[in-house]
Amino acid sequence: MLSVAVASLLAGCAPVMLQPGSSVTLEWRAPAGEERLSGYRIYFWSASEARVRSIDVPDANASEFEVRRLSPGEYYFSVAAYDENGIESRLSNVLHKTVR
Image 1: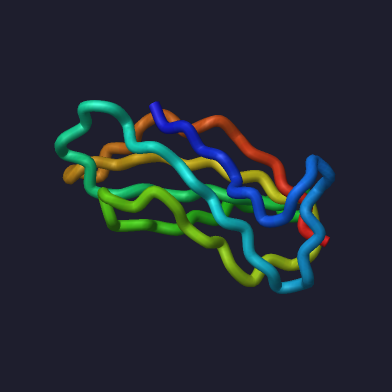
Image 2 (image 1 turned 45 degrees about the vertical axis):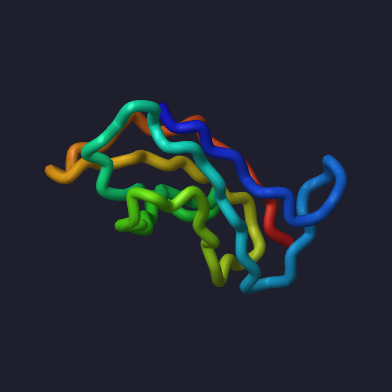
């Protein structure tokens, strides 16, 4: 199972204050013992949109990714690992981030 956490961009527990068009960096750990891992797929959506977007990270050794050009709003992120056949793992926990 993947464990995903939004990286600390600013100190403190309050929502991160970002400039419009800013980015959020996600970090994760690879599933233990998975030898056929091919990459990761990041799913994200905002509270104001009715669609889920995805970003393919085709690097089995990746442990972070920066999602760029986010407009102000409430965002939710989840990550899945996939193997050489494109079969995905369960989604990670969903993380919430406020971009202002």
